[in-house]
Length: 319
Picture 1 (cartoon, helix red, strand yellow):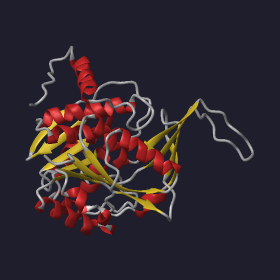
Picture 2 (picture 1 turned 120 degrees about the vertical axis):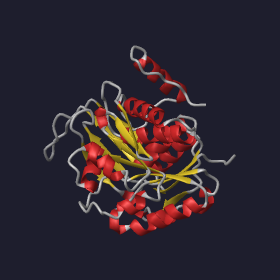
Picture 3 (picture 1 turned 135 degrees about the vertical axis):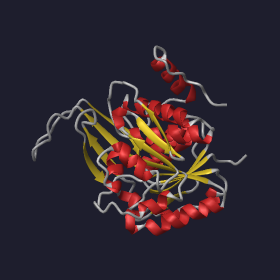
């Protein structure tokens, strides 16, 4: 047995969530809001917190500032059982902060990237990798860092580890076609439906998944309130989403990823992985903060059973 189930590399920052901000202040004005709450943010960090709640043992690779916010994140990780020894400290930048305004409606953000600007896949501590059985990668930037992702994925495969990657939104608009090469090297490839259409040029989600499955053996598409689809070895699967009252959509995709990876590492069938992932995503949006709503494994399974009690579905935990 290895010390870590999953080793993660990626972004971690502070999310300051501002609720009930109905107008932005003019210069010299003050606007009162309903609430402000402080949370751990960043896709890799939210994925890690959700997966740790499900009972997985994790080590996190990232960069934080030598400041109070960096300490806040470290403490939250430690409280969740996440090993923080591989997190680097920066003397150049402060810990990143993202201010989310009205997350329950049309979200607006003010973001300081901070120490996340120093992130590089080359900083993945290989001492942590050899102590794990799966590595979750984030931070892909198309042609800017494509070669290091392909090289790292191949290196991890040679070491006998499985890998997952959430490609994320391409803010450059490049939609680099080299992504198809990387898909062949990664065990689980996560995208949302908009990203899939941009990369493939297909008009529908179904056609996009068919095209992606030509390059990757295991592709998962997140469809938001419509649920999720997966193609594993060319076999397509679909699960509808759970209906919940949406409070804050921050981190929903990362919580979804955590549920899916948990199922994958525990030998669940694809349909069960999708069901668990949808449940984690639904629980995530039910509360403010990207990982606050996701509970432990028992709580997630209870949520699933309650939701499907009056349907023809069954929740059978793979053993």
